[in-house]
Amino acid sequence: MLKGKVALVTGAGRGIGREIALALAKEGATVIVNYNGSKAAADETVSQIMSDGGTAEAIQCNVADFAASEAFVKQALEKYKKVDILVNNAGVTRDNLIMRMSEEDYDAVLDTNLKGAFNMIKHLSRSFLKQRSGKIINIASVSGILGNAGQANYSASKAGLIGLTKSVARELASRGISVNAVAPGFIDTDMTKALSDDAKKLLNNTIPMGKIGTPADVAKVVAFLAGEGSDYITGQVICVDGGMAM
Image (tube, rainbow, N blue to C red; front, side):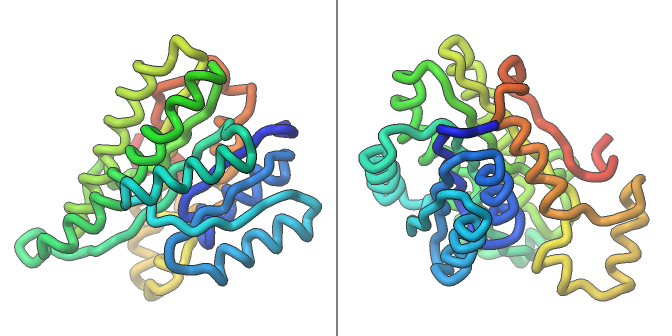
């Protein structure tokens, strides 16, 4: 149970982020639902948590912005006095073949997916160190392990996030702070819903379990890593991918 804990989930308006926010709230955590551009979606996440008897608040911030993320963390700490769990989920895609990929699309993905996580960890690290406790969970991807054609920027950002996870885990472990990554495979989100039936069939053939995962599959693992059952686990990458990356 996470009763009395404060969790901050970036990019929690929809998809995997929303499911993570809901799962942490169900375990008793107060959840700060971060969003960048979609206030309505974030408010819907908060409403669902509240209707289930939980506590949540939506706060806007572009985590790729260093100064804005610093102000966001300050605001959260002033109101809630602490953050116990940080889930770096905010992410974007700008897919294209490398020869057609623009510098802007490369930078946009790295700035949100990788620098955004760095910003949040950096600005919260002092608070975690003072508490001598904390859980940091970074949402990576099997694309960061296997690579994926047409996703050089996304794969690079997620591979970088895995390296960031391991480095920060080594830095903070002696203070009782764990840092782990969860690497989803193909998950049933808005992105996969847009695929044709033939494309989905091809995807399923690459998954040993033969099916696409759900946001809840990812959220359950995050909830475990956020709880005391994972206290002796740090620096790990847990794939939630039906066996794709084994």
